[in-house]
Image (cartoon, rainbow, N blue to C red; front, side):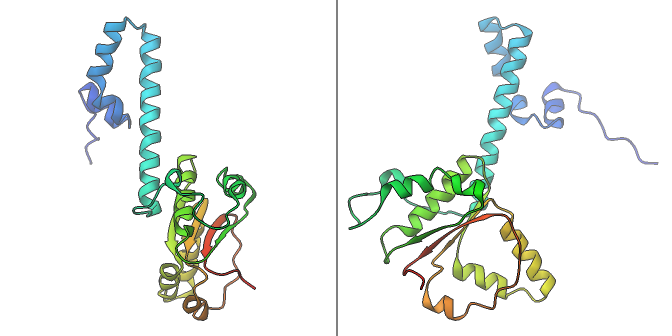
Length: 204
């Protein structure tokens, strides 16, 4: 006969047991603020719930940013719009509204080397995560290396589905000739998702 799980006895431990980690950590400060401002029990409860929800939302964003594997990148706000000879900013701005996600559409950034395609793709992933979506960034070579490393059809299918889980999958350097030459024959897969890709040359 197994003994039942011990129920925490202190209030902070009980809050953590319920998953209210932020409230447990900030309990003393919240109670002190409530006393100073003479909050009613309802106001105190509202503040506790709001603070906990805000903390959990921040944690979700931090986790998704980590899962996206963006590494370091230049923020879009620092981009020099007058540097490329030709760039249609209204189109870029429209892409960053993320309307294409709801429609399951794709986005392709096409430009010569060194003009900001990777920067745009990473910023797009970042923007999607801040808007509450899941997203992932990787290069085409990383994607192909991972897929080609799957030893069975079932393992490949599972891996493909894992790449289809995020709302947005950004694939960098997808048009490089060396990668295109080794691209395997695609399997037939049906997923509802969106992708952003970068390419050095327009596809014929």
